[in-house]
Length: 446
Image (tube, rainbow, N blue to C red):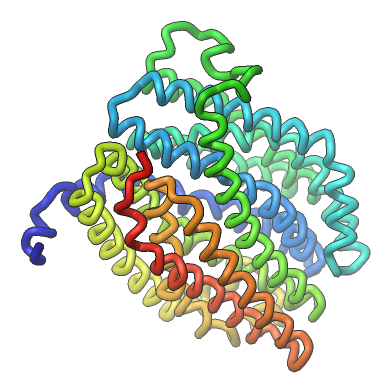
């Protein structure tokens, strides 16, 4: 197969862009919440408030990102059922996944106090930061069931290829959340509690909207609660399949989240200023990752559907074309950071010491898109194929090396620059190790 054959064969670059741009716009709206929360806390004229948001956010990152298997497994399996034109199979997966999501979400609310106590035990920071973090975690925990169900429904929208529906869901939740944070903090002076309440209201509102959208896409015949939730979900024939896939995704995602936790925790040991800077850089990482993930999500949809049809040629075309578009975007983002990076820090804080540290790290922010694009794209390929074990293994290998690097840094020469470089190495190794399993994308299990 030559370059001309690849270019002309379906799906076209135009079609991939057509289903990618809604996700790109929607994903870029997601970090607006984190950016807004950081910005409104930054107006308190103390890095302690930004540090508290950073600590609280990483706790929920650990919780929600580790449970992101709900989104990933749903996307992979629904896209394959879509490729088989099996609507009943899609409905069954929706009911099963939503049932699991609401149960896990309820457990998070019930155990919010133990989660707070465990977080305070594990995290090294000032007493004031930990107090504010505890308040944030408690109030935000009430969003858990809605957040997890929204993950599932997002997975459904991406899996069936309705990326505009995914865009509507994500933008609605993100913008409402950001707006409520501003209102509750700036106008009503609710402080960090206002930031948390904004998230709670936005997530439950987003869930209601998502159900309305879902009913327009899929015919459930009746508006019965049993159509969306199954109290006996563990009896479902797909439960073991989802459990096995989700188990691997859970371990993989837990490694990624704990890598960010190690980065933030080690930064906190250097002082609140360095922790605040890392939080600002993580916001940048969010914008970059969500932008690049637009093509990864397209790969999940198209590769999953091709996988369901057992079409190896189309699978290869999807991989090549989505990867090319993602690399182009990564280079473009690096160029933007090179030109505008110094000015962007003023959007997050007016504290001079934070701006100075952020500027010193700028070269390592510029290369972030090019370093990370490989991990994001290969994740998309393997999610679409529902190949969870390679994702688990490659991330574990990268995480172990990352821990070793951090151990050496903190014991030889603790500094913020080396901590960030260590995190870049972790991102790069994820993509490198996952590429080793490339051939398994064309092996069908059934």
